[in-house]
Amino acid sequence: MNVYVARQPIFNRKMRVYGYELLYRKSVNNYYEGTDDDQSTIALINDSFFVFGFKELVEETRGFINFSQNLLLGELAYMLPKEKVVIEILERVEATKEVVEACRKLKQRGYMLALDDFVLEQYSKEYLPLIELADIIKVEFPAVSGKDLQMLIDKYKSRILFLAEKVETRKEYLRAVSMGFKLFQGYYFSRPVMTGARDIGALNVNLVQILNELNREEINYNSISAIIQQDVGLSYKFLKMADSVYYGTRYRIKNIQQGLILMGTDEIRRWVCLMMMRGVQCPENAELVKNSVIRGKMLSLIARELKIGSESDYFIGGMFSSIDVLLNTKMEKALQGLPLSREVRAALEGRDNRLRWHLDIVLALEQARWESLNTAVKYPKLTAQKYMSLYMEAIRWQKAQTK
Image (cartoon, rainbow, N blue to C red; front, side, top):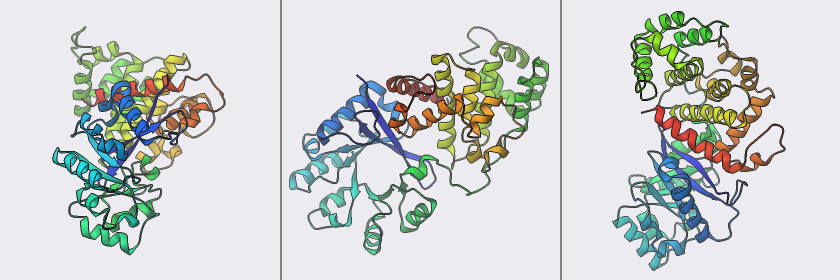
């Protein structure tokens, strides 16, 4: 049976991921199709923990999970690790004495509580006990705003984190910041780089030179070795990587040139791209860099699975798919001077080809737009379940690269 879990990142003011909201999905349709809140949450917990792997879904952060009234009273939350979850109290939950007592017990045991889809009508005498217990209040932004909300934030901001949901523009984000919101969620943050915030950086010239050397018909390892050796940082990182468990267990790496020959051109290209991404990484774009690495690995896995194109080209296509945002410039300018194949360059510039088509599939999966996986088959593709399996493999691979 196919199972699906969508996750949406939640960011703090420093654009670091605070957690992921985990969303139940019954099918490839990216909207809630359930009719029973209890069964939806039970299915989500089962799929997250026993099918996909909860730690891999939330990484080093927390997973936000919706809880209905029945599940709060049934103490299902006690099955979950208190240090890794946030219990989201659905807006349909009534603030009865039993519910308030159940939430108080959760707090006493160390669980974090969030009020989901909070509306000002809930700021009442009956609901006040839940507000007093909450660690986080999620407000649909910008639908809810005004003086009353500002008064609520001013009153509780010293001990409650206010989270702005459904933020879709920079203007909305800045307004939420000015009101005192500390956490943010929405389509605007699916690209966790503040557009135009600052000049992020430039690609390492030595790495670009190495890519140029790798693009020649006859590869000169002496030239590549010389480029690496003139950069102390690159030399250290290369030797450390080359002598890792992937190579050092079988061969003793004595010098850079030997490491290059043992790695082979495809592996060198992947390493160069990874170093490029890390070179432009900063706190504001760390999540986008991570997503780009996952994207590259995901596309290379698709190329291998479907036996299409070059795994190396697909990896580079995914890795550089957001290079324009990372460098704060237009894609055409970002790609200038990079020795890319025609297919990769065309795909990154938005032109329709096979690589672009598969890249769009990966972007849809990344944003939990499951319906896009069922579009007309223009090129060979995989089942939605297989895509999800490869995506989890790509996440694990990316995580391994950061160790």
